[in-house]
Image 1 (tube, helix red, strand yellow):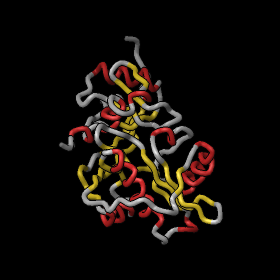
Image 2 (tube, one colour; image 1 turned 90 degrees about the horizontal axis):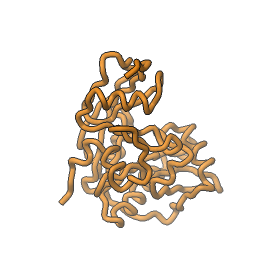
Image 3 (spheres, helix red, strand yellow; image 1 turned 135 degrees about the vertical axis):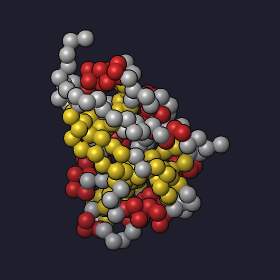
Image 4 (tube, helix red, strand yellow; image 1 turned 90 degrees about the vertical axis):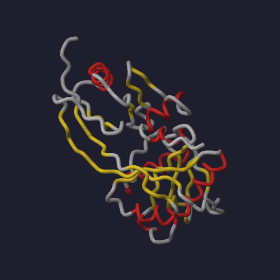
Length: 230
């Protein structure tokens, strides 16, 4: 039976589940290594100790994004930005391998980083590729589009880094790669899901591919205050 509750706090579910090998921990706070991504996890109901753990882990003045449900930072933490997102789940995606899609590996990372820098699909760093399968489509030897796997709460796998070089947009490459990555996820026995900002035009594409909105989390970017002696 599908467990939807693990999607309420997907970073925590992933780092205490299938991605436990990546977890860095300080007290009650877990995170991925910085070279993989900026994602951290708090308990569903963080207390004063949790916030101190996070402050010590991140360091004074650091910027962090709170992703655990509707958790609000303490009053002395500066809120830098809030943004509405959508969490979308597979609701009839026609997953299918793509003959033109190739598996991307460590040697492709510099080109992947360049594509991400130019298209801004979301966080992708030097070691993000270690989280799962990444597929790309090349045109004349150039990486034209890519998509891959990121967080893995039990029973689920997030599709992420969906991006297309501006020179190759309008050809349906992103949709093809989403379906191809979804096929990899389904073959493993997981269910695909993804995140996007609520204003991202790609939300319409994902809906047309068979995803539906499951949750509308609000992410809060906040700055760690200077620590006082314990």
